[in-house]
Structures are given as structure tokens and as C-alpha cells.
Length: 468
Ligand SMILES: Cc1ncc(COP(=O)(O)O)c(C=O)c1O
Image (tube, rainbow, N blue to C red; front, side, top):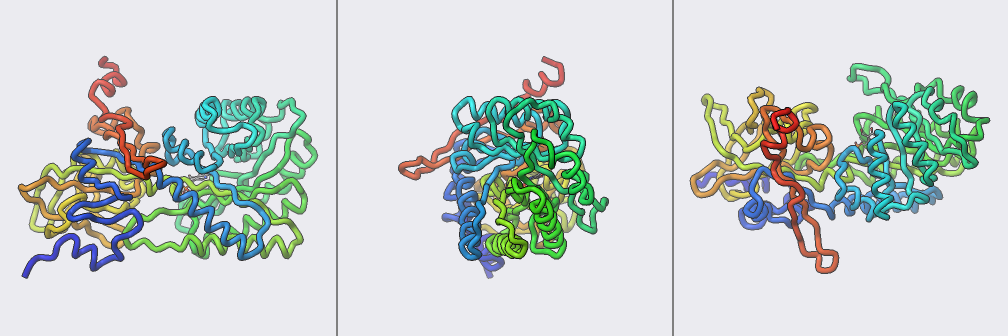
């Protein structure tokens, strides 16, 4: 009997093909990109970005909200804002802006990006909403004030701390500065802390509003923000936090008619396994339905719903491709496939947060497979990957002398560069992989690829280290 092939394994375990993931012959297609061909052109290791996916994700979210708004005769708007920290590259921002996203920022330097985008005519300062989150050191608050004075009318610092307001007290302006308040959410019961360090504690919000904001003409409270660390999930914990935030919105809205944005933060996941199940539309339906019901009962207008999806916007655009450069069989059951870079430094989420990604071979789909551990090049014992979401193993095609095996981690577009750094010094001086960007011709729809950044070279590291 023939040994089943890698294709047989996937075909019998999952619904396959899936959106953006298919095969042609023996090769993996990622959003129609033949990854094997791409590897022949550029080599490995490779970090890949497929830009059109960003627009597709934004459109999907808008469609789900539109459907829910129609269903519940919801009169507020939906504001899609992109959380820059999940992927800061210019090509990413451009893509989100092409799709009319607004921007959520986290630190002073983000505002330099905002200024750059305005200088290139990519955003209109009068129209774009800039949501400025995070604990604000004085220089961050200073930049917010500068941008506000320079005409960014809709820059909204979201107060993370009651003392933050002091930073804006010296603003000399006819038009009030719009502000938001972030609620400090209760953490999941399994976490080390009860309450998030981010945001203002629940019981201080109303007294703080009454004392410092209500009668101050410099400010207009427009937004209530909450963000649940563990993401938007259909769990008792999530809905309980959601409902507390909604109650706070309602209490504040009774006091402050200018309050109009209910910001649900980020937290939409991306597919991290071929067995991934998550009903985005159902969750959005529930969010909209709850807000509608509660505000209707209180005779209040529905708020505009703001989201700050980072992972959801960019995650499914990204992939990492490696070559298997050697195999070691260390005992009767443990086989290692060594790749040409490091898991730890290229996919820090996998190492640091036990995040899983969709892992598939780029070629050899018709070869038999076996259970392996994937090892990175660094000397660190933790530089490995050996489990998937649905099972505690990784299976990949067996190696042969005909052609090397390439493997792809899919849906890695979010946070990896922000956590690992792009360039810079890495564990064991293993360099950042090259970065290839794939787009489609707007008229013909044809795929076109280009090299955004070459493999990091030795000189760039030695320079940082003081050798050059
Ligand atoms: C305030 C805020 N908004 C949005 C996000 C984006 O979250 P996600 O990438 O899960 O969508 C984060 C992530 O840390 C955040 O802290």
C-alpha cells in the first residue's frame, strides 16, 4: 500500500482549499501566489506581504457592520481605524488609507508617521480621525497638541490616566480638543492581575469626568474606549466586560451629549489553523444588537462604533518562508528539520506567546509525510516550533534528494516585526530575512512582486555594534 501523501493528510483532516490557501500540482498557492516560484526568484528566508488582503479584510468588516446596522435599524456609523502598531510599514498604511481607514496610534513617533502621510497628501488632516492611545509621556502629549494646532481637528487623545489631562490644560484654542477615556478592563480570571494597568479605573471615571472635564471648555469628551487583552471572543468573560463598558457609555452619555464614539478596540483574530472556527459576523451582530437594545431602552442615540483592528487588518497578508537545510534524527522518535533562519527572531509571537500559525509545505505535497520538530539556527533551546492549534505535532513531507523542502508559516503579518525589530541585532546575529511585497495590477489584476528589503547583511549589524 502506498504511504498517504501530505495532500491526503490535509484533505482528510480539513476543509481544503480555503480562502487564499490552495495548491496547484505539488505547490502551495497563497492568495494565488505560487510560493515555490517566488522562492525560485528570490530565495529564502523570506518575509512576504500580500497587500490586497488588507483591503479585503477592511471591506469584510464594513460589510458585516452594515448588515447588522440594517438588521437592527442602527442609526450610528461604523468607523474603521487601523492600529499602526501591528505593522508600521508605509506600504501597509497606504493600503489601509486607500480603503478609507482612520488611524490609531500608540506613541510619539507614530505621529511623525501621521505627519508624513499628510505631507504626501495621503491623509487629510481635517478629516482623518487619529486616536491616540497609550500612557503618555510629556513628549507624546506635546506632539498631540502640535498636530491639533496644525489642523488635525480629529485627533483624539484617549486618556489612559487621570493625570494625562494636565498635559493638555495649557492648550490655547477656540475649538475644544476632543478627548476619549479608556476604561481599565478587568483581566481574565487566569491572568496575574485583576485589572489592566491600561486605562482609568471604573469607579474613577464618572467623578473624574464631573470634576475635570464637564465644565472645562477646552475639552469635549467624545469617546469611551475599552480593549480586552484576550481579544473579542464569544465568552462569558468578554460579554460581561462588554456590557460593563456599555453601561459606562450610557451613564456618561446621560451626562455628556457630545459623547458619540463607543470604541471596542482591537481583538479580532485571524485564521491560525486550517481548522479555525470563528463567526465574525455573528459576533458583530451581537455587538450591534446589544448596543441598539441598551441605548433604545435609555432613549439615547446609538453611538458610532469604532474598532481598532490590527491583527485582523494585516495578519492574513503576511507569510514567512524558509528552506529546510538539514535533518537530524536525535533519538528514535525526535526528528528535527533545521530551517535557514530562526523561529525565535522571525516569529517572536510563536516563542514568546505560544502563538500558532498555519504551517504548510511550499512544495512536495504529493510526498509522504512524517512527524518533525522545526529547529531554528540560534543556539537557544527554545528556538523551535513543534505543535499546531489542533494537535501537538507538526507533520511535513519527508525530505529527498530531488529538491529541497520549503515551508511557509501563513498569516504572520501582525506584530512580528514590531516585536523582533526589522534589521538591528538578533540572537546569534541571525539576520532579518528579505522582505518581498506582492500586489495586484489595478487594471489587469495581475500579480506583481518586488523586493522591499534585502537580507540583512553583516555590515549593518557590525555597524550597530561599533565595529564599523
Ligand atoms: C488600544 C489597542 N487597540 C487596538 C489594538 C489592536 O489589537 P489587535 O491586533 O488584537 O486587533 C491593541 C493591541 O494591543 C491595543 O492595545
